[in-house]
Length: 348
Image (cartoon, rainbow, N blue to C red; front, side, top):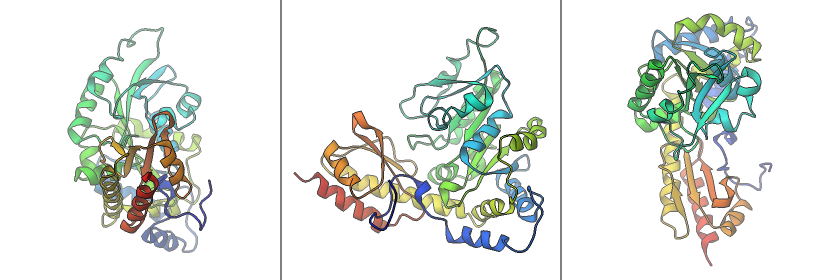
């Protein structure tokens, strides 16, 4: 459904939001004459330095174009042709990337049912019987989403525990960090605490869902993997020729904690939305609101009425479960207007 002037603020996805003014300014500032292509420019160099400042000296950042591409490059660094990835059954790599891991990497995703999108150590150890068995793909990577597809967050301690189990079993830990900023804002920690210090090996850092135009990064913490990144990034069609315009966006996000400001505001708007909806008879909010996602169960006629005016997603149509997403530019008025219309739709 296209958005036009007849639709108010979208609650379907943070991807629907526009670009933050500071990031537009950074793009415009990078549009200053000629610059070398494919990352040999001062903006990309600045991003690489900033990556080390934010995530630690071991961190090496690589600019890519989109989240699925970041996941494929990051996973490809750690996988062979007969390997497998352990992930939650709701993981983005398993549900919303059109089989990219299977098609492009030729690996098997071993999915684990979880009620809240989060893997536990037992979820990993229960899938390790294949190790050493030549009839089965070999578990090589544990991949988690931060935040999860249910809007929940892994704490630093939870990630460290998963990393310990993975490493002890000869595997590595990958984090799909499309909303890494939202997790750090919720947990009130820095980005390093849920990546470098938690024992993560490779992760993506998402910008597009947090106010950027089109900007993601792969960050590698295991230096034994670094030699392959330039080649796999190019082969995966994730090497931007005019990379300065992508790098400039990431630099802007990592300057003066813009990433945190944007994410914390989106999270706050989600909490406002959830609190208001939970007070209404006929609405049941499910899953803890730990990021910028709200999941609620509504009667079908109410969903239909709201969808005449607002954009949002059914998460499970048979259960009446919907997902509402807020963004860096969602305002209290946007939320309150939505709640008013929800209240009206619930009236008999």
